Length: 249
Image (tube, rainbow, N blue to C red; front, side, top):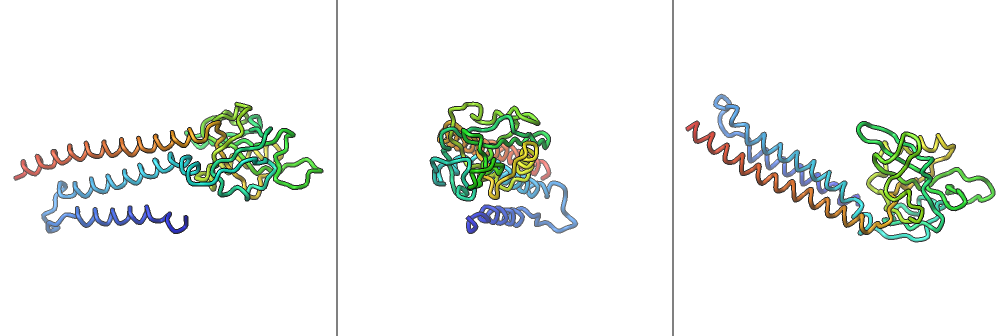
């Protein structure tokens, strides 16, 4: 992963360099007009839009990547160490595991509410501690979501309200997101819990494979729609520029 992650950015930088080289006005400085900068402005605008669309579609695609490219783990206990599941894509929790929807917290960064709720077992244990003689308080697994909870409680992200659901998708792309981390810290503080050393964020879903397929479809729609819009706008701008230069002559 460390080897390939800079590649998209290197491609983007190379593309911008080529756009600058190919669209920079060639006229002498004293002969340049506003129209001469239009191709460069349009090229850079397209490059910026392409980066935005790429990042957006990449975020949408993350559940598919987690499901299809990472191992599936079964019989996950909420009392397990979070570090043991850092590379898991789908997690199937043990019988009795549930999302504590009433202990959730919503951290709002307008216009998005970042929601987090602890996951516990049938006995109400949420600890990754191996000491079973004391009431556990260290939480290793957290269900998360966007705009699907109140400031306190009311968590209904994914299929968290369905008590028969035991599966989840590892939200790998959200690990390290400070907004979710703050939501988790707030939930832990409000409920006298301790966040585990390696907290695992998950999307609580009944059908992880179905969610992954939808993510792939939505990502393809985003890229396809953006490509179609880009072609249409390119044709329109080419026509406008040709007429403008013809009128100038």
